[in-house]
Length: 481
Image 1: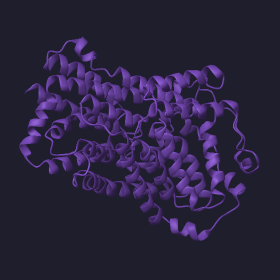
Image 2: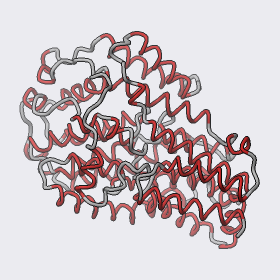
Image 3: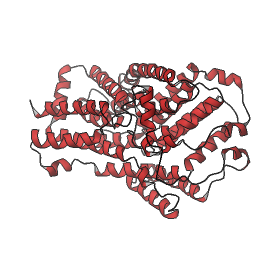
């Protein structure tokens, strides 16, 4: 067997093992890079380690550390309370607020499963107290996290843009971000009307103070621990092993709440949400500094084009120095399994490129002779695999493998990369993914088995419709270069 075929077979085996067994896909990818590189391709250890993405490692550590600090000092809680205050008792606005907060947090760099772990208990609490359909509120969390997942300073956005630049393809940060946001926002609108949004509009409003005090503003222990947030893959996949048991509701619940004790420092005390209407939205000095730091990060990256990772680490260190006690334990909350997952997969892809697997696949693709059909098949591969495994892992593998197809010049690279990203991420509502498993584990107001079945049916529909819609809107018209 040729080295090219062996490397592809090894990649498939790694995805299967990481989906079935509780083994981090990144660790498997590093082992695969070592074995395939040395035994099949005769690569030296230095060449293999040279494929390790140092800059991407800094990005992942920087943005997740900054988000951990924002969680520790209560800044995230403050954002939730502020949003609840803006609702002013309008029940129909609650799902919209949940979607917006989820999108905002992932857009500024928080991994999607971490956002779901924090917001799901809060959102389901509102749903249970005010008879909002759990599917409505849960899917708003899931689609919201994916809506912001491809911003230029987010984990997924940084990965896709970095891989695309390495392949010397055109990159458009704004198109990638807006494509994901638009598709997930469209899905959220459909969800709103399917699962009782019109009924909420007819019910009117309740007392804002009662609404603000009805649910906890801090995540439950199971949702706030590293086991729930950082052990998951960054964008919903069970590939890290933390939620590969999500094939049954009970397994999903177990996978997200196996660790309820956390040595990390508790979040800084914040004003009670019930005071939201009478000054309870006052920021502590460190929360104000944290928000300033996040805004500064956005400006530094978007306006001054500074490095995302180094800037995020700088902001995180400044925040740590200004309040060491509050931010104690933030480093432990960094999504280290996610870092291992991404860096391992990207290292393996680097080995594939060195071996010549990418060119080999490109020749096979060219033999099909119908670029649009190949593009659709690639989108479906991304959607189907990501529904069960790691979104980051599949994107890290498929984007380089799509490069030969894009180099033919018959398809717009910007459109194809955006369509592949949307196809791979929008399916993370599946209960087999980390984000979906978190929803099943934290659901309130509906029997867990019933919620699981509904989420499974919805996830299956998204797997069928999502890639096709992304291909039809972004790729087929040929309007993006």
